[in-house]
Length: 280
Image 1 (cartoon, rainbow, N blue to C red):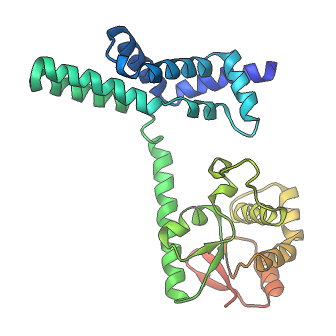
Image 2: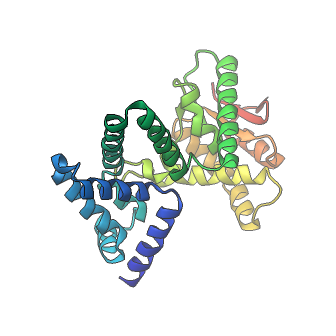
Image 3: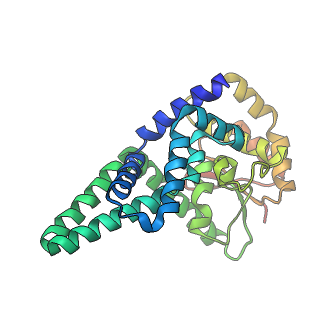
């Protein structure tokens, strides 16, 4: 229980630090309660106030985390709070009052101030470096999907590739099938706690991560040894899972490409910054 309390307290601090939407909710609730403007939705205000309080207090937050199981992090308990709806409701009533009392001369500046406050209180989609990284990954995935469509027109491709490519591959081309989807590395996308991949697919994902790492400057020696020891096994697993197109970074050790060729019984091709193993 002590650990849960500590996680709840640190989770609340992190939740506040990632954006100020909770502060906007508090402001909206204070306005609706003290002015009486929200009396038409009293049940909603009572529920929202109680739910937000339970999420903010460490003891009740810990109990909620215990109820939702350890599979989910602290932030998930806030899904019980209609934060967006109540904040928007309070802002709409406040803005409507300003327009009614002072017309556009008063309402327009207030509307602009509300928009500014909303922008400053949110995370604005992350920092510029993170957004630039995601943009580069998306562009890379689109380029890869385009090259695959051009090189193998009409083929039913089931793709195994680095995570950055699989992240946006189906967004780029919905005809592509994937060895595994984004819910492999982002478990929050699973509908239920038991929506997990089998061991073979998970091992394949881990091996591809090692292959990406081996194309870089350095990787742990133990990981390198296990990656090399399991090349043939992972190749068989990929084929059994229906994969017919494997992309490896061009910088992987030559031994991996050679042994993958031998395991699959095909010759590797080259496509931009990737080594291609096409089983067509």
